[in-house]
Picture 1: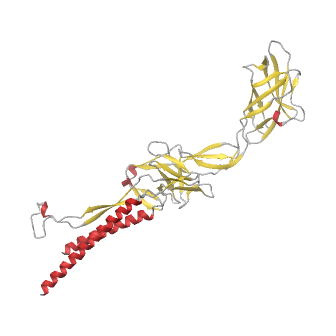
Picture 2 (picture 1 turned 60 degrees about the horizontal axis):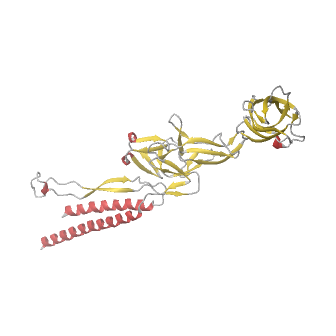
Length: 401
């Protein structure tokens, strides 16, 4: 009967551990990136024979010694992805985990993608401040930083689209003074500065069926570049409609400019050659940041330009047995041979969902069902102990008589 009490005690210990696991799961039902766990039960060892010295080779004489717990198992079932409205909140739709590095260089992993850029412009976890790792072209971990990227110097001009009418009644065609800005070229240099150049067209002597026109670019009254095109039946010929020019801003290297004059016509009327577009961009401050589904940082600047930044590193594992829970929504490597590093959009790493977080994968209805089972098991084990105690008391009472 003493053995029965010990067996009942193993049941109490086992089910109390199960209750603790359920309590932990339930308490974290709203924790971002939390992964539920379940307790593994096993029967305890057996005696080699019956307690009165029976034959050990016959298994029907074996007697068990109660309940054992074999540790917990993490469930990495995908949790619901919930919208937050914060572009730097991220979730992984797939098997990947974000990679974090603390101040001591220790690497950990998380599914809770609640990030921010700190005062140094480094992407960190909002919870504990660890750096969020990116992956460089060599496959090495690097910090994701905005250092030196808060301002975009823009893109120098190289191509201009002009359209409109050149009057065929005058030898020299240029906009009237004062020049309307729509008739000028706004040239952006490599330093992001803007220069205003004015086009001038001069009809040459006609030596054939085509009408040659000299094209000049003026910086104020100074001619800075010259080209030529031919008109046939009032339209530029195909071979001369793209005019190559060169402009050298003060203190800078020469800039190659191309004037697209395919929509400039040589007809009667007034001068109306306007600049319709150009490919240069002025300087602009960083105005927005978001990660796309491949984990690539997209930086938007006030000048309308969008540039790619670093790419998030993701890790995944082959078996949950290779993962250990650290707390703080983080996990560690237990078996490095079962872990792999890559980026979103490749293999089983999954994709990155910006503006969302993954909430806990705890199934509350299942937890309540398991809670009832644990309660019943605990009550039954307690009843075994109580019954064994009553039997011992009855035995002692018989002996005293």
